[in-house]
Amino acid sequence: MGSEILFFLEVVVAGLLAGTMYSLVALGFVLIYKASATFNFAQGAMVFFAVLSFVGFMELGLPFFFAFLVTIALMVLVGLSTERLVLRPLMNQSEDTLLMATIGLGYVLEGLAQAVWGVEVRRLDLGIPDFPIMVIADAIGIFISALDLFAGAVAAFMVISLAILFTQTKIGLGLRAVADDPGAASSIGIPLKHIMLLVWSAAGVVALVAGCLWGARAGVQFALVDLALKALPVLIIGGFSSIPGAIVGGLIIGSSEKVLEVYIGPFFGGAIEGWAPYVLAVFFLLKRPEGLFGEKIIRLSLIHI
Figure (cartoon, rainbow, N blue to C red):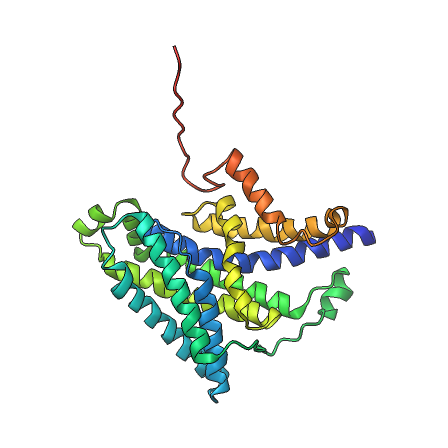
């Protein structure tokens, strides 16, 4: 196999591994959107809050595994507090009101995290070396970082597990019923409050795992808040209410941004990886605004006689 083809495959594989992590972040958005039809602008802050708390607990002397469990409990508490103090009082309010509430929640979590743990950049070591796996390199000629492969595998496991949980179980049926008609779902005995609590808790756990994976690569810092913005093109391409769409959209964004950066980037002076996904998202908004897996939008046009 030619060296150019091997290099292309290496770029695509690296993009797909990054795409699984984009899918993981986007999945947190999808779960909350399906339950409340609201785009959770606090998801990026939840990622930052979760991983910073995790590193902070380890700095206090807690072992890795115990600190992880304590942080999971903390994110469940954040989900419980959000449902009780924010969502429940605003249950019958407009979607715009809920959207503004999530923006406010994001600022609260950002400020709380930095007030408790400080603002300095921290290093997170998962015990996985960031070096190519020579067994794979010798076998097929593609250099894949052990850290990237581990992060991609963990993200893929989380995405598939949550996808099965929320599509193939009674919990998933309840979530779909709440997404279709909250009033009707509540009238037939589906516990709306419990569904919202579960969804926000799951989003918190997803934020923790995503924060750990990205923090191990780039350090635990405030820039992780902007990670949520990378999930926006994923949601536009896959569909805001589709779990399979979050998976496919993440893979498309991950692979396309790497390929475009390597092969098209030099013509623009490089550094197009940061904005190329948004160009692709704009194209989808113009041609297929509901996304690949979203519900078809029916447009009505006025006919002038």
